[in-house]
Image 1 (cartoon, helix red, strand yellow):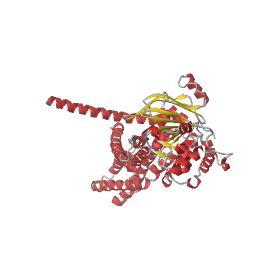
Image 2 (tube, chains in turn red, cyan):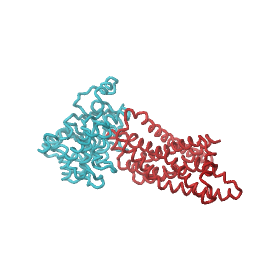
Image 3 (tube, chains in turn green, red):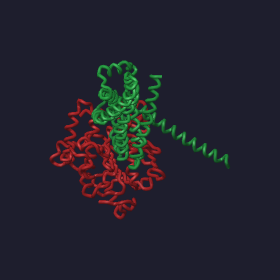
Image 4 (cartoon, one colour):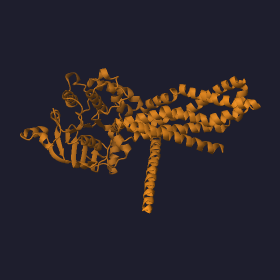
Length: 267
Length: 281
């Protein structure tokens, strides 16, 4: 009796594991299919999708600027003020360069940008595409001979990825400005001193990592919600479920990828 | 309007490679032994069907699902349990998804619920297939043609509105204009009279199949001589005026095939006796 219940439990675990593998493999296959559009661009052309790309760039990039400015300014000010308050007591203000580059440029900048983009664009993509699926707009595209991967997913991939890369750089620029303002207000530090501390810590790897993280996060934030949006079975109640799944998975994957990239470049 | 389609050279390549059988050019849709099942419901047990250019065929089925599923299977959006389907002489079952999409450029499709894109205006909904499939330099020509189509369908005053602002019958006219915009050889209508009243249904059918009004006689933008397949749940006598051939499916099998007028002349048996579903018109 006891032995059979163990087997039942093992069987359930096995079925669950198999389902998880199937879901993960379907996501990977979707990513490859979306990448496949790139290789077919010569025959498909950009065509009318440029309009969707521009809209996506505007929504993900331009419209996110006010909120990202706020997030960058507040998080930078908090970190700089806290660190300088302690460091100035022992005359070690130079540590501000290390904190700025390591904590803000390498780690928090790309992560907080990704969180903002997930909150705005990831949710929007998942909700929009799942609604399109429920209303049969995706099927309508297919009947018109329009490839949904080309018309719906590809422009979002290009738009979100480009926008995320730019937003990561924008976050750093805003952080630099508000970091200086905070340092000035806390310890009266001059701009020259503040910049020297930061430049001393800056390496070429920081440029590559910022760009790479922006690209990878943009890819994740565009493709995962698109996947969840397009696989919705067809009931309106599945729209919020798809959106929630997309957000949770995007956040988890972004944090994981951030850790892996940092580990590869800095340890 | 220069619209890239499956070229004749590509078509010959497919015939040579065995992907297509060399059919008469007039045959736009052909299926043999088509078997369709939805969940446990048998929808078709082996349908043979041919639609030629200039011909209007109505397929009368028992359920709403069948009226939606069969046309989607016939254009390769959904898959069948078995059988053979050819569009313009090309067998679609062996084609890749990409080639199926290319083939559908030459098919106009009308959804039972219009299937419009809700974040686009009426103008862009009509223009979308042509804008997508046309090279950038020819966009100007697309715009002019779309304006004429919209005018022909009486949609000019709504062209800047989104579908949410329109009633269902107007949405169907927009969907009809969209189905025409690529000048397809094959038009497939998925239960076109669903969700609209009798008068609006007659207007839609007159617009789709009726003679050109005098002001449009010389410049009617409707596609010339397409083959048309209509699926319908139940019989709509309004369709009889324009249909060349009617096929009634009962329990998955063909219960009647022939001219609907001939069916009427049989006298005592009303078409409704053959198929126990809704009757309208």
